[in-house]
Image (cartoon, rainbow, N blue to C red):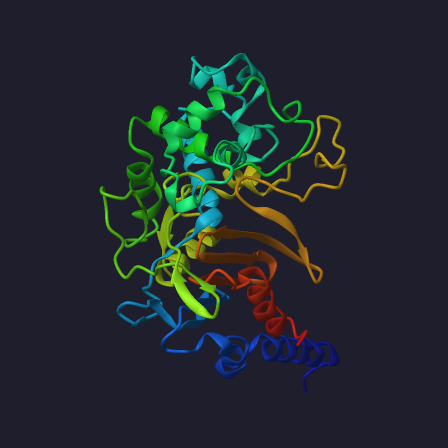
Amino acid sequence: MPSLTSNLILLTLMLSTASAQVSPAAIDALFSKFENAREPGCAVLVIKDGQAVIWKGYGVADLRTHEKIGPETNFRLASVTKQFTAMAVMLLVHDGKLRYDERLTDIFPGFPAYGKAITVRQMLTHTSGLIDYEDVMAKQSAGIADEKIPQIHDAGVLDLLKQQTSTRFAPGTRWEYSNSGYVLLAMVVAKRSGMSFGDFLRERIFTPAAMMHTLVYEKGKNEVAHRAYGHTLDAGAWRQTDQSSTSATLGDGGVYTSLDDLEKWDRALAEHTLLSAKEMEPALTSATEANGAPLRKLDGSLAPLYGFGWFLDSYRGHRRYWHYGETVGFRTAIERFPNDKLTVIVLANRAEADAPSLAESVVDLYFGKR
């Protein structure tokens, strides 16, 4: 006869299994507004216990062709790209070609003197104080429509930063999100590897992880298959808003990928295919001041916990690694709960979609909060 203890264990397992089962219909209900076959939409992936249990698209990738969004549709990731840039940097550290404590001026000798105080680690954690190049562009192009502003590339960002004379704060003393650091990190990867940033990611990340349809998009150099185009709802009508003046930079937002390949990315992270668990620890450790106190933003508010390309916190008491992306016409989010073996990814090609909130709504179903 089973003991009381074994019965309790069995009951706990049954309850745990039941809580993890979410019907596709419940997911469909959350994404019902995106089901119109003549509107841009989104794609959602849920991975539970190492298996893709929800893998679905809603709406269309391109209003000109009405191609349906599916698991193979490739979206611009925007800032979700940063975790790939961070991984590339970590792989160079693994190779012995780079150190986290190297200074910006060690890598780019012609960089202004203020770069002597900025380390690779600080660029990874948004504690470098580098002025965001988008802010500089906004000031320089005030009053000019974005579509009339030439696209800036990585080298152009470096030139803008060379024109600056200081950082927003002393490096390491504050936290402020800055795309500039990740654009420069892509250039660091190219310089220290001797390869283009896109080629390095393909050879060292995408191919080993079997992400065969993921790429760093560079107009005129490569093409995105099954491409989703970004859109914005304007006065009741959809307008294609796929590219902006800042859409050609690479390390801060240039990766295109799909649910198919992101499922493989999640598996590579879970199985430590690219780096060991020990080597991944810096990426999953939040930045702190030298004395160990929590960092603050310039306005004095408490900074979010951030590692290398990942926000680090808890959601409803569950440990979480996550990031979101926003760029003209696209909204993206990835949420990983390692202790729960749960990952939720939402990719949208419509500007008004709140990808992080949608992802959390899916997570709530799995945590029994809806």
